[in-house]
Image (cartoon, rainbow, N blue to C red; front, side, top):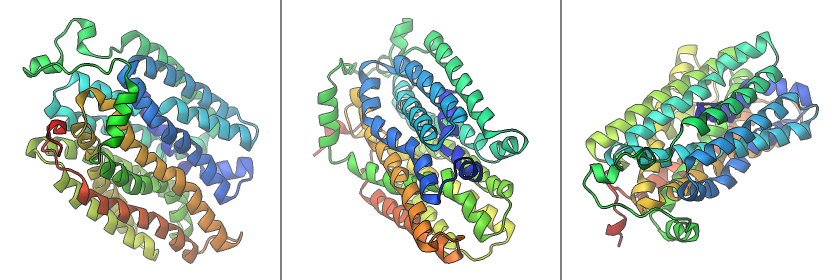
Amino acid sequence: MAFVLAFFHRLAPGAIAGELQQAFGTSSASLGLLAATYFYVYFAMQVPSGILADTLGPRKLFTAGALVAGAGSVLFGLAPDFGLAVFGRFLVGLGVSVAFIAVLKLNAAWFLERQFATMTGLLMFIGNMGGLLSAAPLALVVAETSWRHVFVAAGAISILLAVFTWLFLRDNPRELGLPSMQQLEGKPEYPPANGNWREALKTVLANPRTWPGFLTHFGQIGAYLSWGGLWAIPYLHETQGMERQLAAWHTSLMIVCFALASLAVGALSDRIGRRTPLMRVLGGVYVLCWLPLLWGGPLPLAASLALFALMGVSIAGATLVWSCAKEVNPPAFSGTSTSVVNTGGFLGPALLQPVVGLVLDLSSRGAAHSLDDWRRGVAVLFAFALFGWLCTFVVTETRCRNIYQERI
């Protein structure tokens, strides 16, 4: 549930972009900065989150993170000016930045190695329910009430979740007197990180097999989060003449398809015992999905819905990068390795959201955005998506097992 809220906050600005611009009188570039503040701190916190997950454990991280995110959400909802809104968004990003890596660490501790991609896919499915709430449902609620009320309520829920997390979450089976996953599989126990975060970070960063996954996420996930989290709805409104609620249903459909496909892709990868073929095929389809958006011409409603659905399905291939990162690094450093790769996915939108806004502002020179303006903005996202796909061809195939000891 804490991860659901993380996804909700990640994509919510796209559904209320118009309301935020009206409330704070911002330009497109400033709106991009407000939305991207989440990604700046999320990006900066990924490696520290991985280190803390390996040393302190997920339970402490989750509890502290949910409290900070709750306070930030309340501040964002009550912010009287743009500066405090940015600070509230910063606190939200700081609080939720620990959620994903902590759950991956829990998955590594509570499930068998051959189940990791399946459970990661399930995690993405659950988390994307928060993304779904931040699209069309949020737009419908905001039409009836204020966006401020929504974020104050989300903050209160986050604080309540912090209490439940502390009471019920446990870092690994041994804390409940149960055998570890290594014992169940008849494998030797891997020593815990024991606070040696410098060794963990040095080992992961020095491993050349870590970086292709980082770059894949930087390009493909970066473009996806920038698009779905901010620019898709304004694009559809201004180039296709859609009402914002109809445009929000497009991003909702994309998120649902991403959630379902993530679940299916993780399970299929574990079943066939391969990672990279799915990553490359689906990544190529994702790149092709950007071409109609780059063209920007009018699309029938059925075609635009199908396009967004296909984008959601195809970007799911990039979720396998987390499994690859864990499987090319020492098992005891699974939190650090997945966090390093995950950093790429949040560095992308941290750069792209304001850059696209700046491109739109410079192209339109302060006037309403034309189709040519949007083509220039989408071209930036397309270039990142293409770069990320090309990087999948140098990701190491692990065959769904840890191959760190087999490194050359």
